[in-house]
Length: 412
Ligand code: NIG
Ligand code: FE
Image (tube, rainbow, N blue to C red; front, side, top):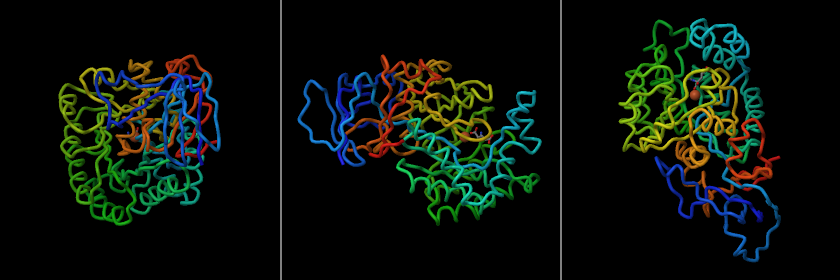
């Protein structure tokens, strides 16, 4: 099946030779062709070029994209999309003055979600997650990372990861899974955190590795959750099973978790709402992608990751949603891109690079996703008629995505 998209006003993020990521000043460069065509065959990008040199092409389906922009689908490298129920009551409690920390200390937060998830059947959890996944696909997400971390028992963590894997099998988008058993200390282990880490190390990690349920390992490295020493123990044990770290660090407190992540060759360090000079120095020269989650900052009214500073220091930056029931009940990458421009002072070019090729890198998909490159997955989106691509973040409340094609399949 060949799909030809022609008369494209501008085809964005074209890379003849795919890059692994873009960093520093390079992030301002978003290569493109004006007045372009793009040819898809089955699930792959076959060819593209300028309408000025338009070869004769026999296609099964032709889409006219006059006045429209075409770009790769979003690569959302950090989500907790598999969860049960919601935490709307905590949202109202915060409006009425309780803090995110107070809610967590009173049995709300991650433990509240864990209680709900443990009581939810695998089938029900799958169905709840499917509706979220369909929504994000319609909004242009073509590859996604999904974490466990609301199970907090061996059975419930595995249930989450099985659901996440099944989503990847049953839908066209690519799913990468991450084991986040160290998301919070369950109440039964309140006085015995070491006992819970023992359970992660001796029981959960071997089972998850044995059943190949995850590619990555994550830890919430934060005061009141897991210390740098706890994180190091988990990362070093996970290494024995070839689980690569992608960790939650520097959301509220600077603890030195970024340097630890770099030491363990973390693929990404995520959140980074608070950062100091040592953190930035630790990232320089590393292969670790810093990931900002601006919708989380928006929803919790906490600082935005100093993305401008990171890019100006010559580093790369990826953007992701953090879709979860507590701190970010939204999987909208269009909002993430807009918020990164509005609140973090990224240019539209930088934000689009951060949400495509750099997001792909942050989940190990840079060879197959994140740019318009021959042989990469045919995961692209076509906007409505808009004056230019800067209109995507500028019109932050509008849905400007008209058509989404994920791995060659038209999403409706
Ligand atoms: O990335 N910070 C840790 N974990 C999630 C949110 C957890 C929750 O409130 O459910 C996050 O923001
Ligand atoms: Fe998160």
